[in-house]
Image 1 (tube, rainbow, N blue to C red):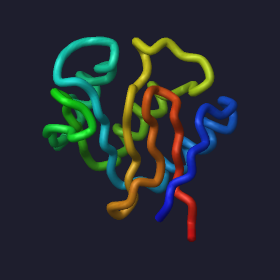
Image 2: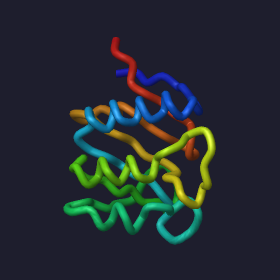
Image 3: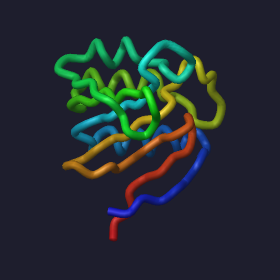
Image 4: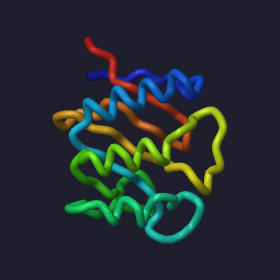
Length: 121
């Protein structure tokens, strides 16, 4: 399914899109450097979720991907962290992640606010 670039959208639209895609998703993939720093916000919270897998991420040298099932706890964590796409403190927001439904990325965020969503054919 192709994705459409939306970029930063008004927060009311963002919260609606996030909620819709969180409800659809059955998996998440969070990307960050393999170490502490401003791009690594959320590491301990996502590593604390049950049955997550951690491996290298090919999108950046020395980076990891934390992936897991979209459980109620994972949904609540995303909703707690991702409250705004218009204005945010980079030290309190996820840098890069994907929400996945049946193996297809349905929403992705890069560089904190570069939003892409799936577009039905």
